[in-house]
Amino acid sequence: MLEDLSIKDFAIIENEHIEFSNGFTVLSGETGAGKSILIGALSFLLGGKADVNQIRSGCHEAQVSGTFFLDSNENPNPAIEWLNEHGIETENNRILLRRYIRDNGRAGAWIGSTPVNRADLADFSSFLVDIHGQHEHQSLMRVPEHRKFLDARAGIVPEVNAFTALYMELVEKRKLLAQLNSSDADRARKIDMYNFAVKEIEDAKLKPEEDVQLEEEENRLSSYEKLFEGVDSIRNMLDGGEESVVSLLKKIRRESQNISSLDKALSNLDTRIESAFYELNDISEEFGAYANKLVYDPSHLQEVQDRLSLIYNLKKKYASSQSAPLKEVFDYYENAQKSLEQLGAGSENKEELIKSVSELEKKVYLAGKNLSEKRRATGDKLASEVESLLKNLGMNGTRFAVSITAKPGDELEQKCGPYGFDNIEFLISANPGSPLLPLAKIASGGEISRVMLALKTIFAQNDPVQTLVFDEIDTGIGGEVAVAVGSHMKALAKNRQIFCITHLASIAVYADNQIKIEKGVAEGRTVSNVHPIQGEERVAEIARMLSGDADSAASIEHARAMLEKYSGGF
Image 1 (cartoon, one colour):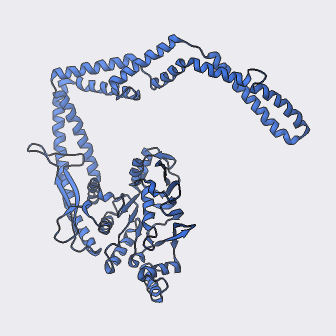
Image 2 (cartoon, rainbow, N blue to C red):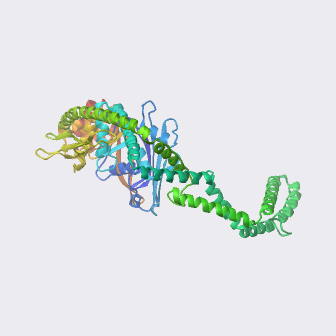
Image 3 (cartoon, rainbow, N blue to C red):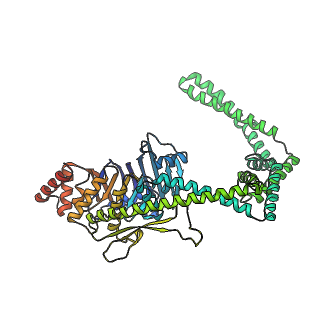
């Protein structure tokens, strides 16, 4: 869950630090006060697009940071697994995300103390927050995610993982069989090629990072004259005569000893002068020792250059480029040895391999067919559940369907992928009589948010994302529908942290927490103020949302009654 958010010089927000609680939090305020800017700042932090226009007028840099609590009791927790894979540690199960954009276009981001690029930041944050509305973090809008959600709903994730392992084993064995089926001449050519490569790399007797060390040595040997001149010049300046630094420090030291004996207040300065003298004298001696060992050896330089030429030649043959890491040559060597073992097995293992491939194909077919059947059964149930919820959320007549189609194949073979035979996509028709279309085709932000709310309610037990943000959830709704939306959010917030921007009091009164965003003017510039409200201030804000008048006695009384009924107080 998101515990706090710090925003500095982002759009019209000057400097805000907001702490959040679990449960259902509503963001309210007048139109144009900056509610969507707050969500925009969060989206920026999570890896959204960075633009210099996001920087507050008159400032040079916008910064956003946020602390997230990761539940280590949730097993598995994909966010923690991601951090472990990337060697990033949490502190008390918390991780800090930071990001900035400067007016010169330069941007940077960190996860904990580790700098990351935008792609990594977005990848990691996708496990933390979903923003639904006009923003980017919408996992349910990405078609590949539909298969994951359906499988989780069907309870077949372990079966899918087992299928993937089986499928990858089949792919590897088919690949090996194809190699064995190649012509004898081609097979012999490959064996000769790999044998030559293995021998050539072995004969080179390469050492890890040897190219880096040799390049440094070549640079040192070929720069002998410059090095010697530079070192000799420094030695002369440090200790090369009466006017050198060390000689002058000797005189300063003697004078300092004399005057510090007259006033003990100067003893600390005398000690520092003494330390500086010994330090510089030691530096001078080390430069001298370096100069004495510095020898120009053209024969050794030639040996280094010859060795580098050999390494560059090997890289040219067995790595992606001459500037590639030497590790790529070692990797090619290992792969060549493995290929030799496989090709050397010859026809004696071919019959056994054909039998193994045949058995695996049967297993993959049966397992894939079983997955398809379970997906279809769950898809029909899911469609009914979603349509029922959407009806309560004011989208009466909306049709929802889970499209499960077989991957294209031919008369002899059904095409298969690592997750089975199925292409899976959620389809919806938001208006009666309209055809079913992909979920991503929905145009209205309010419709998107309500569909996401329905799906998130259903998937709450299977979705690892703990923090959900709904923007424009109240577009085009009111009355009983708004009450139903608020009720659904309240229920969803029992297991998730929910944020919602709304203008409707009938949604806001269900919230566990309410944050008010106000726009004002300070020092001639527009600023946005963000602060939690409770007690009478929350009553006044609900009253404003009801009638536009926070001081109306009738509105205030109505607000009190609604808060008592739906929130149990204020």
